[in-house]
Picture 1 (cartoon, rainbow, N blue to C red):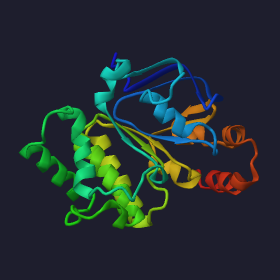
Picture 2 (picture 1 turned 90 degrees about the horizontal axis):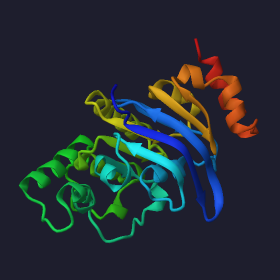
Picture 3 (picture 1 turned 30 degrees about the vertical axis):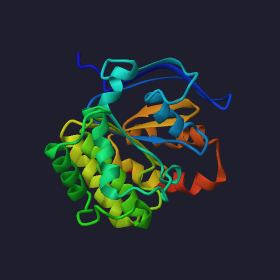
Length: 252
């Protein structure tokens, strides 16, 4: 039996002593594009950070490609939310993408020709060739997001964790990123992505994790995005009821 890309058992996590995740159990097969959906405060970002061991005080266990602990992290690339990044930091686009080579190289080795080639190739794939020397704060929101996608590409990881990569980007950039993620999936990569749009989730993902501090449902979009499951996850919140109705009306 093939080892799952991600396996989680009884995962519990707190943030600033406030419980955020309760007893999550799930497994993600290799080579899937998976959306993580749920209301604000549901623990979506916390889940990604917990998978990487960045949330102290977690209980339960996480295995990535059958391994636990720091040994599993060499397989992982992380794309954070844009608002968590200091865009005034004096670093250029090329240097940010080169950070993706730190894990493969180690801290003490200097990048070589192959590393610079991988960085240039990653920038080309996200459409940022020619902006290598630009300070990251000078870029548009969509370009900034693509820089971090390029960093993940340069890392050559088997598992990509993305925290709302479509937030604040235009439709062209969203399409570019989505097509790139689908191409990576076709190469056997596994992608977990926090997403908020119920209307696009049905066509974007192979599988969905619907959470609200606990796991509400997991499976194909047509199984998870039902009226009962969505109301359970969002607790009847008025601001998403119209999205729920629209999503259900688009189902065949």
